[in-house]
Amino acid sequence: MSKQLPLIVKFEVKKDKLEFVKSELMKILEPTRNEEGCILYELHQDLNNPNILMFYEVWKTKDYWKAHDNKQHIVDFKKAIEGSVDKVTVNKLTIL
Image (cartoon, rainbow, N blue to C red; front, side):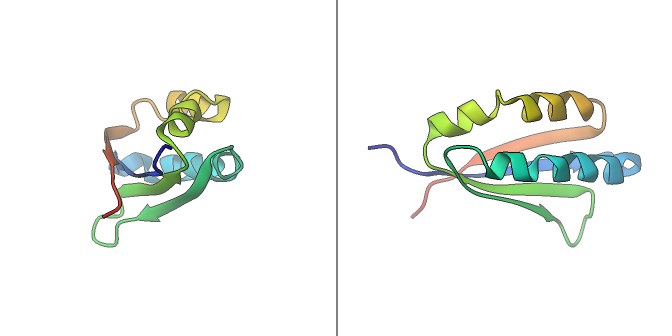
């Protein structure tokens, strides 16, 4: 039996690209929430640094999350934001 996979995906966005990246992130919310295996998919903005945007995600299994990365809306999203983000960090979590 596979365990759920919670994640935090952090985007450090270039200052002049914030509104663009935010709009691109908003476009992938519903398609991702409708994917098989997606339990939770929420977008957050840091209160102290608005150029940091984060997804808090929970997937039924690691395999569902890996499949998510190959969905067309994610492939298109990654291409669209090329050059607009300084850094993306993925933290895979475990529930204690």
